[in-house]
Length: 338
Image 1 (spheres, rainbow, N blue to C red):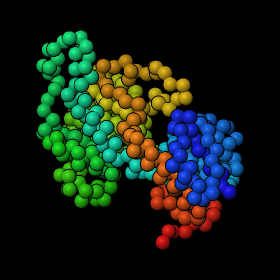
Image 2 (spheres, rainbow, N blue to C red):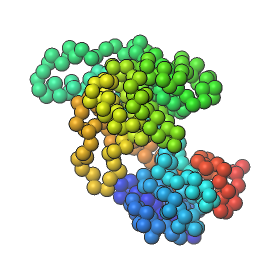
Image 3 (spheres, rainbow, N blue to C red):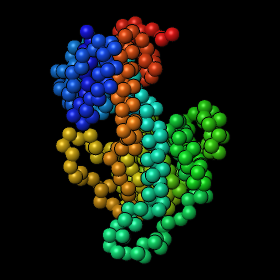
């Protein structure tokens, strides 16, 4: 019988469908929150599969899991997992990269529309009885404005399809523009250099994974290229933006605003949630949401079920559909499904 350890069981309770997936490979499940390395090692030292929602899994943990065959991320991003160490140790890292494409695109457009129509301001004005809010000078017609997509993978493309309905002009920056040329033409999106995108866009939306290359990509210099009326939207990863530089630009009104679902300096996965202390929370030109862009009843269920299914595949001796470290030499041989 295999042993699977499921982390984040308090903040993201285990779904019965997860156990159903593991039943087909005869795996018993140990569930815990597992936010600290020592806690993970104590529970998972003899595990065959580690199932992860939001916990950090550093190399020091992976090296202490001698039987582990798979680190299954029940979600998309793997920036909290030491993939390099997992690969060196022969551990497959799997994920579910497309479980919330629709939700994230919808949330991105919701943030854009909430800013464009000044919905938080209008709500506050209604509570004050200030009917003159209808004349807010910052509300402009969306059609004809420019949305810049930083990255043009599946997430950005899902946004682009929806943004067309509002008459937005689309520009995008891709690290490999040739790869995305056909997809860009299909949605009438112009592929441009990043600095040019920042200079011409009224809305800048980030759609990249967090890697060594993308960490701090939007630094003080690049934020400084943005138009004074521009708004930064981030539903990807907080650390892609230099948060201190962004706060300074927002305070000084060098850009108009920001709509953020992800953060570097606010831990939205804290076990004891409560009011955070962060300068972003003191600004009146931001819209903030608690890393919920990918969340819905359907996407949450799908991320758990498909994520655990990946682990079950490995335990049954098969390559899962989505392998992050495709060059890994697994501890136990795997075969492709016919």
